[in-house]
Length: 323
Image (cartoon, rainbow, N blue to C red; front, side, top):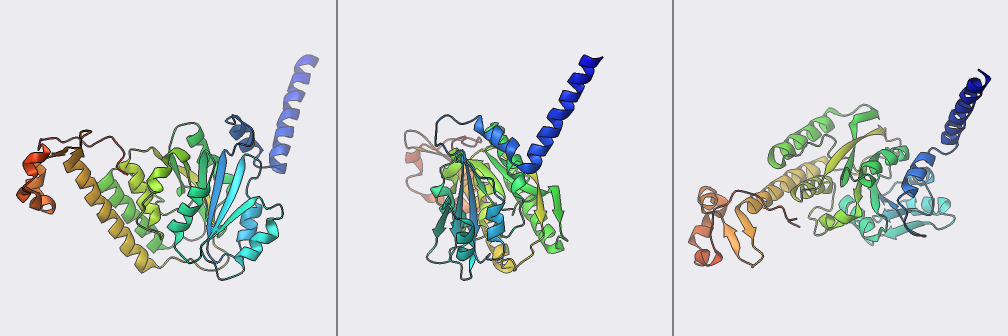
C-alpha cells in the first residue's frame, strides 16, 4: 500500500511540476516539440513574420509575448510606418535578435508578408498581425500539423476557435461569400479566409512568387494558388481578440473589388489549366470541344497554328504545379 501511495504521490508531483512549468513558460511544450526536428547547431526551425504599418501602441507588446530561442527567428517588416512603431521596436529589441526590414514606401499587407518570407530561414514560417488580435500561444496549434506532415499550409480560424469581440455582420457576410465562391469554383472550403494568422512549410514558398495582389486580397489569392497547386490546407482553431488601439487599414470598397477581381482572374487560370496541358516535348494539348463551347477561347479555332500543336481530347487537370 505504501508503495502504491508513493507512486501516486510521485505522479501528482510530476503533474504539479509540469503545470508549474507551463505557467512559468507557456511555450515550454512547443519548445520541446520543435527541438526534436533539429538536425544541426544554429538551425532556425521557426520563422515568425510580422507585417507592420503604424502600430506604435501594440507592436512592443506583441513582440514581447512571442516565443524566443536559438531555433526561432522574428522578422518585422515595416511597411513605411509614419508613427513611432520603429521606436517601440527598438525598446524591446535590446539584444538585436529581432530582424527589422523597412519598406521605402508603403506597398501593402501582402507585399510586406512576401518581403518577410524571402528573408526567413526557418523550416516552418508563421505570419501574424501586429495589432495584438492574435495570441502567440496559438502558434503551436498552427505549426504542429506542418511539422507532423499533415498539412502544407495552415490558416487560423476564429470560427473553429473563439473571438472576444462583436463581429461586424458585414465582415461575416463578406467572408461567407468568399468562402462559398472559393468552394464552388476551386473546391476548397475556408471559413476564416481573410485571417492573417497562417503557417506553412518553406517548401511551398514558390507559390508566393509573382503574386498579383499586394494588399489584403493577398490572403485570398494565396488560398487559391495553394489550391491550384494541390497543396494540403488546414484550418486550425485560434483565439482572436478585439483591437484596442487604432483602426483597421482595410478600405472595404477596395478590398471587395480586389477580392472579386482575384477570384475571376484565377478562375480564368483554372479554365486555362483545364483546357490546355503543356507536354514535356513543348507541344500543347488542346481540347477542341472545350474551345468551341467556351467563348473565352473561341478565337483559338481560327489560329492557323492550331493543327501544329497536336490537338487532342482530354478532361483531366495537370497534377504539376502551375506557378
